[in-house]
Each structure stands twice: as structure tokens, then as C-alpha cells.
Amino acid sequence: MKQSLQGIGASPGIAIARACFLSSERYVPEKRTITDAAREVGRFREAIAVAQGEIEAVRAAAEAKLGAEKAEIFEGHLMILEDPDLVDAIIEKIEGECVSAEFALYEVAQSFIELLQSMEDELLRGRAADIEDVSGRIMSHLRGVPHTDLANLSEECIIIARDLTPSDTAQLNLNVVRGFITEVGSRTSHAAIMARSLEIPAIVGAGASVRAIPERAVVVMDANEGIVIADPAAEVLEQYREKKRTDDLRRSELEKLKNRPTLSKDGKQVELAANIGKLEDIQRAIDNGAEGIGLFRTEFLYMGRSSLPSEEEQFASYKYALEKMNPKPVVIRTLDIGGDKDLPYMELPKETNPFLGQRALRLCLERQDLFRTQLRALLRASRYGNLKIMFPMIAVLEELLEAKRLLDEERRKLLAEGVEVSDTIEVGMMVEIPAAAISADLFAPEVDFFSIGTNDLIQYTMAADRMNETVAYLYQPWHPSLLRLIRLVIQAAAKEGKRVGMCGEMAGDSTAIPLLLGLGLHEFSMSAGSILSSRELIGRLSRAEWSDHANRALGMRSSKEIAQYVETIRNGVTT
Ligand code: PEP
Ligand code: MG
Image (cartoon, rainbow, N blue to C red):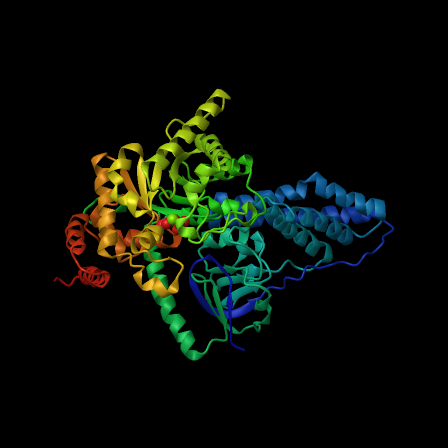
């Protein structure tokens, strides 16, 4: 059987080994009535005591292997063992219904698990896995069967399971376990978080099809892409072996850069930040050495639901992001809806040219109710970190001034209500419309920073819809017209002593980075996975030299010519 599955890459890397299934079936005890309730309660308490000793040992091992912070999960497990809500409910069930300890444990734990799994809050849902873990351990002692001994696996393998509990993950014998794949789970499940700390490749949420992989089949897992291939053909196997060699080498080198500043070869410092859409992305940004969040696309908070998020909901999200990144900066962009991002519940009128229509700030200035709600949530959250507010899709100065006026009005209202608001919030704008780029000098005195949104700036400069395949040939990031606009923006900002970032995809593009560094860009914001390789690239570039190269490139006639020029210089071939 040859098959390829797609899951979520939860911890990067490539692994090749035989599949080893971890039985994930939870034991479901039959209802058994008992006559000696005291004896049954005694068995239950004894099983708890043994589990306690075991968890303490696992905790100590995890602390040695992963550090105190990660071992905290097991403190949580010990607390579950002492949790009167759970323990007393089980004892009451044994005594009140005269049922076996196994049955009472299963029933009570299951009701807790189901309740927690139905919660919105991700942390509470995570607690369901903890209760499953702990109750499984107690159950194995009640039944006298050993808890699966992951620490004693002896053959190189990739573990495949429905899910892995935190204690499973902490016990993995890293001398033989090459990676793991789970049917369920998300990037933020405990197992995924621990896999990242252990730095073993992990793919989660690969779906029920993983069960069709035969036990001991050779499996290739590419956790960088979330791909699982079982029983690969010989040439595919060789291809992945080669990919793995290159990947391992590169990753171990890149990891060293995680907590380093981003410096060019000639010692000029720039900032590498991450673009995020969901709160879960923040951890990924941190894991990849982001020096801040350069773009928080808040529209994702408004999507996938049936009504607008309340001020409270938004406040909680912004506060979370700011606290998690503090003291690093978080640039939060106000709602950018419209264009390709629709909110069906708002029933916005259909437009002939939605990308040129009432999107983003244009809509917010019209629908001030929803804009003011967002501004209030942002201002209230500001005291929890280093907030920068950014307005999207500005074409003319009046739009910026109006947005700032509304922000100021909401600030004054909050202060009058006695709400604390930071007085160091920077306010900036995206430059994604050619009109704003060309007249950047008019905007520069009015903002604290610019962030160039090349995804839109390219489509508007070229009049080529970014979604339309047939005109994709015009979507040219390195075209002289784009580079000239970028230079205009950087020069206008420099005159006012303001910083310029870029949060369009171009900022993480290895052909563009040398030119952008040369043009004097201060901040590059990109998807988290590109940060370390970009930091490494910048370390090999001299800004002074690339300033000359960029000026030369700006005089060239086509994207192709510019790309070839960059390639030639980067390969060290002089022209
Ligand atoms: C951009 O236009 O470059 C940008 C970052 O915004 P979005 O992709 O969300 O439109
Ligand atoms: Mg945009």
C-alpha cells in the first residue's frame, strides 16, 4: 500500500522509520456491582498512590530532559489526583451505586472529559487530555496491567497514535523514536508543544486514515510540510533521505540564530517579525525567533462565526497577544475586510470590483460603530504590552487623519471613564496603494511608522488582480516600478526619522531581501517559518554593498533582469 496523507506540521523536521502503533483504545470497563464498597474504595486509593509515585518520577525525568517549565504539566497531573471534585465523585459513585472502582473511575472521568472538551477555551480543552492521561494511569493500576512503556521501545520507529498524552510524549525514548504522527490534535495541543521542545518531528491531525498504515511499514514524515508517506517507492525514499540530510544540517545551523539579533555582515541591525492571523500563531512566531509581530491580521477574529466579535472578546485576544510578546512590539492592524475577505453575516453589498471597493479602513470609516468597538478594545489592551496600531488601505491623507481622530476620541472617552490606556502607543499605516506610496512624504509627519503591504501594492501598481491566474505574470515583486515605490516610501520616512517595515509576502522572499536591505528597510515581517533562514541570509549580506546593488537594480528594465542580477551577486560572481 502506498499512500500519502496530509496533516499539520506541529514540530518541524523529516523522519524515516518503521511505523509503531500505540494502542489508543481506551479501556471501557463493564458495569460490575460489588458488595464491599470499603474494599473497592481502598483499591482505588491504592491505585492513586501508585500513580502519584509514578507521576512524580515522570515529572523528575521530564524536568531533567525538558526543563522545569515543561515539567509543570505533571504538577497539574498531581493536582488532578488530589482534586476533590474528581476523587470524591468517584468514591461517592462506588459507595452510592455499589459499582467497581474501574467503572466509577471511567464514568466520572468521562463526564469531566466530555464537559471540558465542549469548552471554547483551549486551555480547558487541554485539561481534558490531562484527565484522560491521569485516569488511564489509575485504570492500568486497578487492572494490574502495565502502563504502556514508551521509554523501553528498542527499535527505531515513528509512533502513530490517535493522540499522545503529555506523559506519553515525555517518556518517548529519543534514542529510538524518530517522530510521531497523530490522528487528532492541533499545533497547540500539549503533545505538539512538547514535541517542539524535544525537537522531534511531529505531525498532528492527520486523520483516521493513519490507521490504514500497516504496523512496521516504512514511513516517511515531512513535518515541515505535514506530509506522511507510507511504504514509499524506492526513488521517493531516496529523495527524502537526501532532503533529510540537507534539512538536518540546515536546521541545526539555523537554530543557533533563534535568540540572536538580526545583523547584516557589516553590522547593521534590522528587525525580523512575524505575520499572524490567529492567536495560536504567536507561539510559532516565538519558536522561530521573531523579534515582534509585524502584522496581526485582526479580520481572522471576525471570520468563521455568525456575528461580530464583542469588545470583550477582542480585548481578550489583543491582551493575550501583547502579554505573550511583551516587551516585543505587536503591530495590530485594524479590520481589513472586503476584497477577497468576506464576512457573510455583515451582508455587505456586492461590488463589481471588490478590491477597489469599500474595503478595510474605507468600510470602517463608514461603519464607525464597529471601528470604534475595535479601537476601544485595542486601547484597553494597550497597557499589557508594546502595542502599535496600524490602519490598512489608506489612499489619501484625510482617511488617516479621520482614523486618528476617532482613535483619539475613543482614547479620551476611556480616560474619562477612568480606564488606563498606554501613552506610548505608536500609530502607523500600511502603504499598499500606489497613491500613498507616491505621496509618502505627505503622510510621514502624521505617522510613527509605515509598513509596506506589497501583496496589494503589487496588484494595484500593475492593475493585476492578485487572485487572477491569467494575469499572474504581471504580479512581479522585483519590478523596477515596485522597487522605486519602496524607495520613495523609505526616503520620505527617513526625512522625518520614521521607521519603515514591510509585511507583504515580499519581505520573506530571498531574492527581495538583499534589495530591501540595501534600500534601508528597518523591519521585515513574514510567516514565522521564514524568519530563521532570512536571519541567516541577512547575516551574509553587507547593507552598504547592497545599497549600491539596489540603486543599480532600480535602473534596470525588467524583473527578470533584476532577479538575475541578485542571483549573480549572491552567488559571488562579479559582473
Ligand atoms: C498586503 O497587502 O501586503 C498585506 C500584508 O495585507 P493583506 O495580504 O492582508 O491584504
Ligand atoms: Mg493588503
